Length: 423
Ligand code: AMP
Ligand code: GLY
Image (cartoon, rainbow, N blue to C red; front, side, top):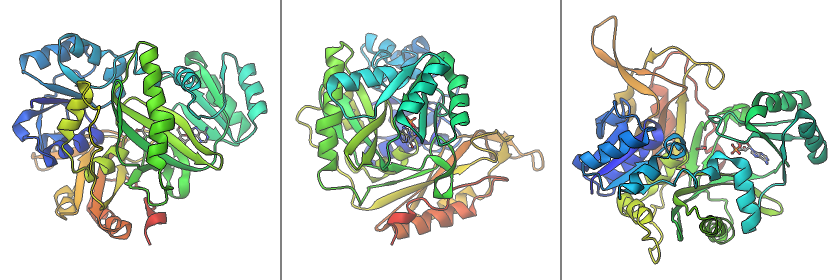
């Protein structure tokens, strides 16, 4: 099956590695635009703009593409799936309308209310006075969310009233949601959806804060592990029954069936499971650990989802081995950006067979000293170092040994990924 993957991050690199591991031939795989690391595993087309619906559809038609897998949210919001579907090309990724489940937090809340899906209480606010009233109603800690895509920077959770109000001011233009604070463990659970039927993947936990012990600002995600040994029995079935299936059913009722990946961001509170967000795409970095453990054919699963064929499908298989990923971030991330700097000793880090490195923001450049080509970091989250093994203690050992070998001036990473489950 000829497959085109859209995107340029570690999530897309993980998708590529999982496709190759579960039966897809390298010759059948194209990535646009890709990055330096992905180009070692698959043919990349850096010139193709993944956010341009017509350009992508034209490329897919010309190259006989049979399945397009959309990684990030931007092409979804731009309507790339719609353009591909109207040309009769199978696409794993929701329509522009269905992607609103991620793009608009107030839309997601309306869907959840109509479908009876458990979530935190929230108030939509148009003015700063309304924000202040809602904050008084719910009390501290304050949860303030921008009601649109804000590149992972739209949410603040803080006890500091002034910081909460300042955040609301900043995003007032795109609308603000004030939400009750929910205490508990966070779980990311992905479902493949074909419009009607949902199929669960394996749960993961993301580490959102920049520094150890969950300190520092929120980021796109600094690490993850899967599975979650502390989850209660029947958790996945409960989320499927009470969250994913009713949400997908409600999307049918609204005339915008959801085809693609339904990312359920959940908090396990004392009063039960609550949804804190939906995303319309694979999570990053959770995908790096979830797909690392997948043993079923990823292309078959995504093709079935893309073509309405999940009904009656058995749930995907995962190895019992556990996986962790640690993200290497550039100096200053997430607050400031660093200049492009060389990354050294990658091959040494990846020489361990238990370790895989997914590239997030890398490119080739000419080393001014030697005149030779080398790899440089081009963004905030640079690499996801993934390790799989029988126990979390062993997986952590391999991941941290590998990441310690990599040299990128000024870079940082969290030391406590999966530490609580490694004993
Ligand atoms: P979101 O973009 O909605 O996932 O929010 C980013 C992060 O903020 C989440 O991963 C949580 O850590 C935190 N968060 C969001 N909503 C809440 C809430 N209602 N209560 C507590 N923490 C939250
Ligand atoms: N890891 C969080 C996200 O992908 O949104």
